[in-house]
Length: 461
Image (cartoon, rainbow, N blue to C red; front, side, top):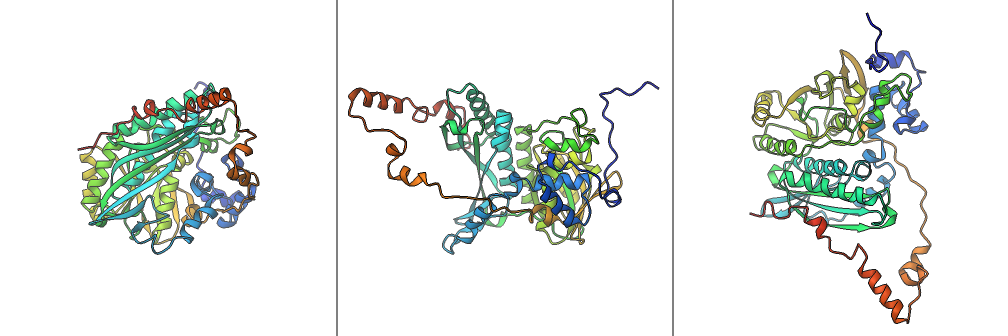
């Protein structure tokens, strides 16, 4: 038999719970996954052992800044603490759910959510911005609402910088392509250029949906024996990022498979998914639906289980794959787009599957709701995850970072001219030059070259 090629990827044996117990001192690449030493120690304390590679993947992504807001949570909580009864008068759904919901009268409600896709939009502007739109819209439909509009708030670097055009044109094209394909009007937004955003653009997207009060749904895994169903696109290697190193024993440059870190969107698949989800809600076939966005299956399973009244058991082998070479850790962390997870009563499963088939949406029954208060995941017949889901999705670390009042802000507010070291000129030539400079600023120019790429009239009838 010929020797295996040096480039052939040998699938590693899954790191099981039994392995974790038997090999407590095994070194794990927690730092490469973004975890600090004390956070890794906290995970070991929670579990009473070292985590398996699958558990490490889940904790690393769910405890990241992007998913847990661990550095900003102390400030975000103030929105809840400072809310008044008057503010809540028309509030139907507040913080902690997939999207907010507000009563607008006569039995109607509006759902909305704003979310950023900043770093992905710098790495790969088109797909980074496009999948930001897709993720927001899935949050809207998971509430039972029909999406009706999007908006965007954009911040880019210096317009004269050689890299700015790449980011601007890519991000704008991504937003327009995805929303236009979905048939959703872009009803407003703003665009600002400033050197402070160089290499760190802000791409914020707002999604808006409408629904009747009685159609409002939230996502949780409740009801012993209810089925957990993954539906939509197949799971691929996009959006995994650092999880690929868990497929390597050596963690060197040649070990892990290099997976793309930015998700790839398919708006036409999402359009079908919207109609499929709304019909499932209309026919009362689901107890709840959760979007698979950041952190993929890791996020959906842990959040659904943490928000429910029991636990969850998952057979990871049942996940439909675009890439059969994916490891268990990569499947858990994949951020492939256009996927949803539903909780379905057993007696309604056939009807659920029939609606999915009608819309040509693929499904896979992954497991069921349990009464164990644990999230348990099996792979190839062996247990690779056994955690309290709240420790993954809710009770992550929260940091009170050092902050200081910026002393320069008082002078700036008193006089922006003096604070900037400028003088008020009496020279007509200088005043003329300053007026022309302001008038020629890209932030004062017409944004039509951007907004004309967005369809603002669709759904106008």
